[in-house]
Amino acid sequence: MKYHSHKRILVTGGAGFLGSHLCDRLVGQGHEVLCLDNFFTGSKSNIAHLLGKPNFELIRHDMVLPVFLEVDEIYNLACPASPVHYRYNPVKTIKTNVMGAINMLGLAKRVKAKILQASTSEIYGNPLKHPQTEDYWGNVNPIGARSCYDEGKRCAETLFFDYHRENRVNIRVVRIFNTYGPRMHPNDGRVVSNFIVQALNDQDITVYGDGSQSRSFCYVDDLIEGLVRMMNGPDDFTGPVNMGNPDEFTIIELARKIIEITDSHSKIIFNPLPKDDPMQRRPDISLAMEKLKWEPVVKLEQGLKKTVEYFAEILN
Ligand code: NAD
Ligand code: UDP
Image (cartoon, rainbow, N blue to C red):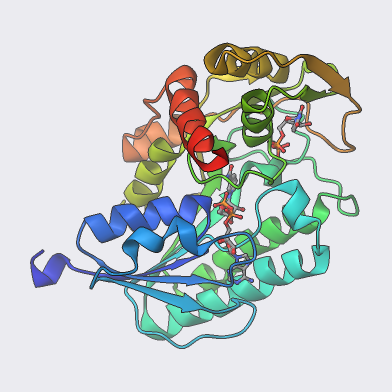
């Protein structure tokens, strides 16, 4: 790569599901990539194939503590993302979101780096508006079991915009909707990984509630393309911008699709719906389409097949 287009890029949470795919992409483009992770939910196996590359460096570090590096861009992805993981130590989840954001924004301010925040559709809570557009302020329980994550991410957004207004930090905020694909943690309790693992093992598929709640599932490659486009988009487009796949499915439809793809003998069983579980979720991605010319291209069946292949391999 020509020197002028070659950047030093920090990816926090780079050994996680999304982070490792982002590192693949940036290393492949020839950038110098620093992957920072404390391996809480991420793993070395996700990035093992990158370790020998001259333009990839791994830093074991907890983002709650300051770090001094020289970089041009920061993708801030570090944070446990699945309910099982973020509830394991809720106070730590808040610290990662809030103190981690302060440390990364401070770093961005010091070295004048551009910084992108991986925010989430969870900031909309159990939405009263459907589909969700970026101007919707959300319906979030501040004291519930999901609050450490939802409110932590909301506070991180506030910090990003305050650093932008007060300190002119060059920010990007992306609200990511449910994303799936290879390298999801097999025990993270998220619906796609749970159902695939259950189906491959011919175990019962555990639908929570009656399965009429809906989600929209974005394949990881589409999401990574969106993050990179956002980072390289115009400086006056800070977001927040929704990124996800607007094709909406009920959880029972997803269970049936996964049984079909895996040719499984699993039965569907119904378990109680967790508290504060949103009934509907679908992104309105008009803003990303207009500003970044981005929209997902991978259909659910196609993405599920690739994800099933991955799980079949690691479960063997
Ligand atoms: P993940 O759990 O696979 O990855 C998170 C990574 O952050 C892990 O490697 C973990 O070890 C690391 N980490 C956690 N706390 C840390 C800390 N204090 N210091 C350093 N590293 C730390 O999750 P993911 O699905 O890859 O999610 C990545 C980001 O995207 C998260 O911020 C998440 O909130 C956001 N997001 C993901 C989704 C999704 O569907 N996957 C949806 C919305 C938002
Ligand atoms: N879900 C389910 N069975 C499972 C895991 C999840 O029915 O084994 C449901 C869950 O109650 C929710 C949806 O699937 O309604 C998506 O859950 P996930 O944890 O993947 O994402 P989130 O709730 O954060 O969108």
